[in-house]
Image (tube, rainbow, N blue to C red; front, side, top):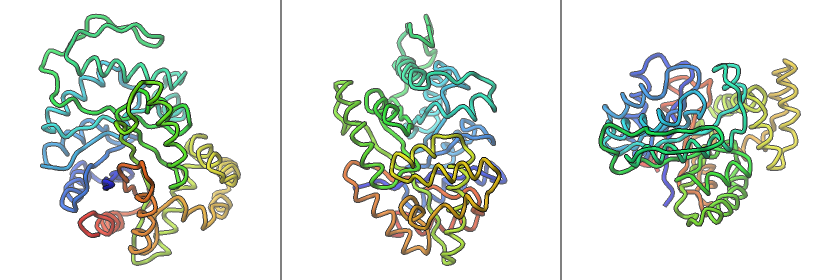
Length: 334
């Protein structure tokens, strides 16, 4: 059975309490895990701590924290601490993000993201073991670090995001899970081959790698409003957040993604929205009235190899629209 997770919204949320309330609402609705991204608002660790203390059963996770703005040792400490606070319910999701975020926002050089992710995962594993960390890599060299508290039990899984074939292969080889976004059901199925190839390289069972597909969802009685919100969201990410999302869609056969990106970069937002066709929107998102959105999610759940669907929300959705979507797509509503 496929899990139903929720990817909490961070855009324009008024308070930390509002994010915690979403997590509690997700718990009440039967969602399996509440994932929290970290963008340019509140830091994920503080909010995840509040979520852990004010929920009881739902798993909580970071999806994602980047591998540049915190050191691997600190990420290990953070994961161990959050696992303690969450009483064993924490999952660490991490990834390299992209140059727009790392260079422009954090002022750090963005180089060889796959190598950095792999080394970060390996170091975090050593930290979480409770043993003395000895590591000699290309990006990091550590000696002597060791937790001064008991290592977490159970050890939180380390789940990796990635979009290209090599990034997904890396997740299959080194991670406990993979998070994919901006993928149609067929697009996720194609990436599962990368998971299997990576698992084979790591002499691992691909079934031990949890596959989570993030899907932009908006389920409203006003179906046109739901579709408009999703179209604006997808166009923003394809056009304004680097080239990763554009490239992911082109790999899946949507050549119009390149035109959407170019129009957005040229400042022609209206043309970018027009280029995002209804077919692409329906292939990529679960939007419209509640019944239509539920049917769209079922297309993802029918893909053999997907372990969880993470319901996410358009960045322009308001609180009422987020809550309506969360309730309509909750496992307990099915």
